[in-house]
Length: 92
Image (cartoon, rainbow, N blue to C red; front, side, top):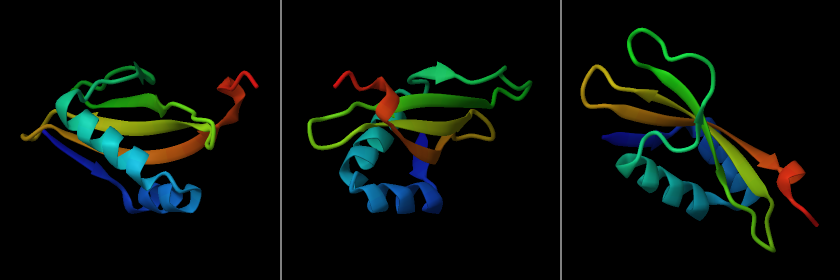
């Protein structure tokens, strides 16, 4: 399994100071590529667009993370494509 972060998602993580959290999620996706929920139907080739999140902490909001899982051609691959602050989920 290969998991990567796109240049744009890495830039956004750097802007918000969550590079370490996104890297930890990338490592987790290498082990469990189907975290979170699938967005829309699975394509015939098995490709899925999925969403998960980085949980909020006292000093940062939560983040919604969108990624694409492609099982073929081998090896299966995950690409983190988007990172968005998710303030709505906070209960402050």
